[in-house]
Amino acid sequence: MAEFDVVARIQELCQSRSWTYYRLAKASGIPYSTLSTMLHKTVVPSVPSLIKICEGFDITLAQFFSDQDESAKLTVDQKDCLSKWNRLDEKSKALASAYMQGLMDRQE
Image 1 (tube, rainbow, N blue to C red):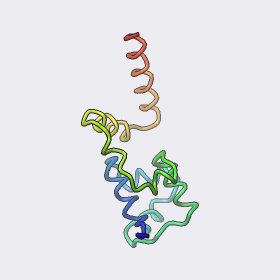
Image 2 (spheres, rainbow, N blue to C red):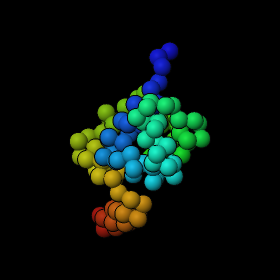
Image 3 (cartoon, one colour):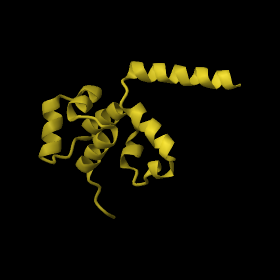
Image 4 (spheres, rainbow, N blue to C red):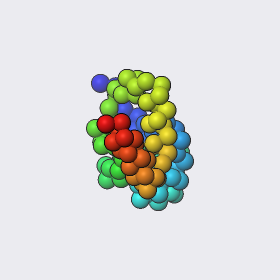
């Protein structure tokens, strides 16, 4: 069984969302200094810290550790939309979701 690189996965998720480590620290409730130490000194986070990081990314632990690239199944347009979605704060996500629901209601 291959060893899973937790730190590299956190860095990958930040990069895919165009997030800074500061934004992840704010979203996860982990002090920036703690997160920075983890990522720059490649210290593996504790399970409680990893759970907070996953909550910050709005993903489950299972999704964090998944080795399957679900984005490979997405179209270019879907990837673009998801990329934009991941960069929104919670209030903007709620507004975008309401707007999309309005568009769908209009089509019916």
